[in-house]
Image (cartoon, rainbow, N blue to C red; front, side):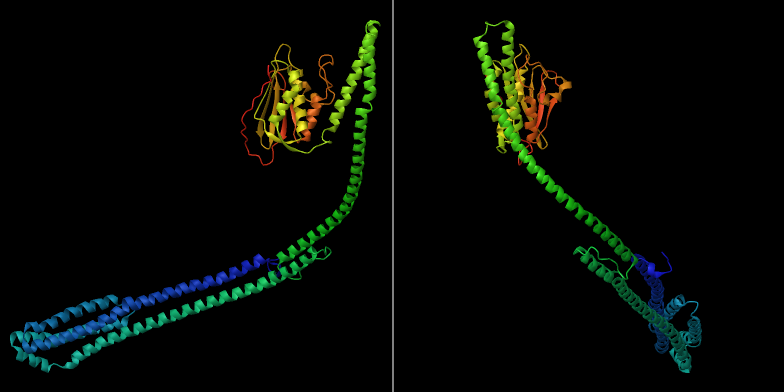
Length: 533
């Protein structure tokens, strides 16, 4: 930026320069006003503290001289000492006022100082020629001789003495007039300074308004109109301002670059929107195709559960007939083959039924509702009572009310509790505990038993469909139970995992979302149920 070229100055720079110049001018006026005010105060102080008291002292001096003259005349007539007191008081007052005047006189007041010397000399001469002789004559010769001295005395001597005092008063009046004129001149100067300062402030404000209107208000109005046109949809409208501060010119250039960027991106968005719409159409077509495929799968599942099981039932039935009718009539190997056929057919039926149940989770739904897990566990306990046997314990406490499908949640607990009952330790009564605690926005539910447990290396494998950890002849089942548990939990928005840090037995955790609108902490009374012995 060229400092010498004012057109390149920013608005802040221009305002700062204007304020600096005005501040310097007002500062100079303030300094000048301070000196003028100090001078005015000095003149006023001189009038009030020096010249005024000098005038009063001059008047008092004149009065003291008159009192002396009156006292001498009275004493010459009566000869009484009481009539001499005005003279004595006037003489003391004269000395006091002369001393006061001399203390107030400055070195530059030569006329006043000379006048005071003249007054002192004439006063001494009058007392030597009139006052002292009268007092001496009264005391030595009587009042007649004193009156003769008074009558013979020339009154012009005392009149010249009073005129000398009047001349001193005149000099004091001249000094007072000069001080008053100086004070009035200082006051006029102060008024002129105030008028000049007010004029500078008014002119500065007017110039600042002009500057803001020319460099800010008008360019912003033009810029706003152009931006409104762009906002209305004219993205090809070029944005610029013909005049204004460099700040606004740069701002207009930045806005125009932003307009160009937006216009470019808008074109890309429009192109992308067309592509997205095409993709959405393709996705919609695929979704419809997937829906048809799901219907076909459901039809296939029905066929698998009905049509495929029918031949299996026949195979199993005829194999069982062979087993009952010809048992013992054939050799041992033939009986074994027939047993294998019966077992295989039954196992195939169970696999098909479990697979069908797994595929229906989340597809055939009755809708979510509020489910009391305490009630669900009561139903599960009733269903598993034959399998539990005598002495088995199934206990739960503080289970919450959640949102979900009650049949699926019942299946979930049937599989978990059923596995705990199935994988019990020999000669040890099974104990299964179901607990729940709230963790933020979800319930964390734990099913724990004292059975044979699950090794940590199989923590993930147990939730895979058809994965078995034991031989078929050791424990019955198809290996799909925990896979169904995982799918039900995930369908309800939760997660499931195996706790491998337990000393004995198995401990499985799963989560379910907290019922919307429930209290932060639900303190349910513990409901403990036990399978009858």
